[in-house]
Image (cartoon, rainbow, N blue to C red):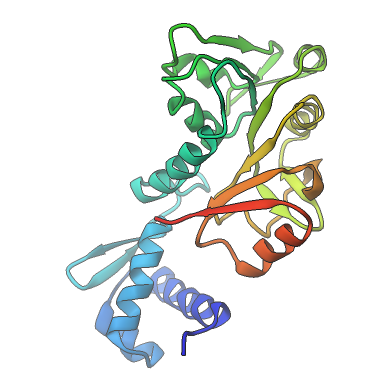
Length: 255
């Protein structure tokens, strides 16, 4: 009989607690400490590595240290890029597309090089992204907020209020049934709300497992504003079921 999500989740939390305490632990040590087989531990470690939380080497696991409160590594970037690629498939030739300051939403632009589109964004980093030579990129204008290089303020709000899009791809810091789409930055929440409001077609939210079930300080929109949520297979099943029950089409990519 397969273990329930809660059992697996709790065991992986215990593994992470061990690694936080010791930094590096062998598969044998974890197996003996938790009282489960080495095969099971290896399976857990494979999942944790794909989630971008640990590194594996010669029968050992090592925790990845956070830098400035953020985890950045190859595995996590692969996860986000795969989500972005799936989102990009919804964009059609000739569409006008809104994206926000999300790094995953920005990654979707990299997958659109074969499509001629009009991109409207408050994300200054788009200037460094290659795109179709016949595509148009429009920056909203406004005050630049660092380190995200986000354009906010009255000018940005005025720009988005005078445009509409065929489709939007937006990221978030948290996504929960209770608080909807959330971000820690009030000024960005206002822009995100406008992006949702001014989208004629589907609103696509891209969010890896770390965002699902969590809430940040400021709400950009409700769950009912979302047409598609693209996330990964590590997202908690109870949250996914709740989103689907609320009418969201959820796509979970496998890594």
